Image (cartoon, rainbow, N blue to C red; front, side, top):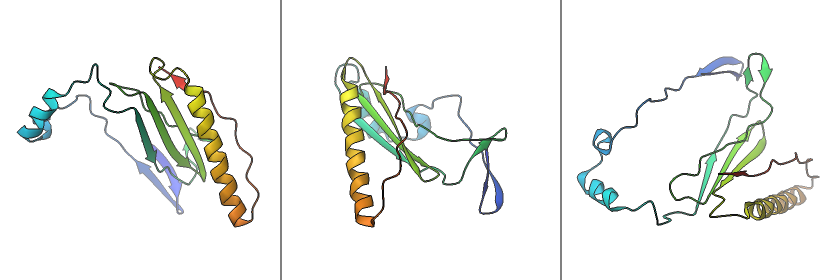
Amino acid sequence: MNVFFQRETLGAAFRLIPTEIKTLEELGIPATLHALAGRLEFTNQRMLNLVVSNVPGVQTPLYAGGCRLLETYPLLPVIANLAVVVCVTSYCGDLYVGLVGDYDAVPDLEVFASGLRRGMDRLEMSAVAGAGRRPRPRKTAATPARV
């Protein structure tokens, strides 16, 4: 449960997290897709190398136990045959990026993270130059997570 104050009103968000994972039959997936899913091989073949997830966050401060949440870093697990997962979210006007990689598949994840930082820096410099503003000071980034 999240409780927040937005637009001069107290609000709450409730989420029910299921305790069981439903089967394809329980989800009502057509038989044709059942057969296709049954033929997929996830153990040796990389179907995807990179997943990027963008989830817009709330733009008003959140509190828990009277303490304000200052930052939020999104993370998704590296599952099946994924090599790298990049998660992006926003909170109170800032952008936060979480980066997770499979060490065996991507042993130099820091190189990817460094390139991502440089690309974000260039994007920010271009945006502020076009708007005639100075860039905001950047917070120190965390080290990418390895699995």
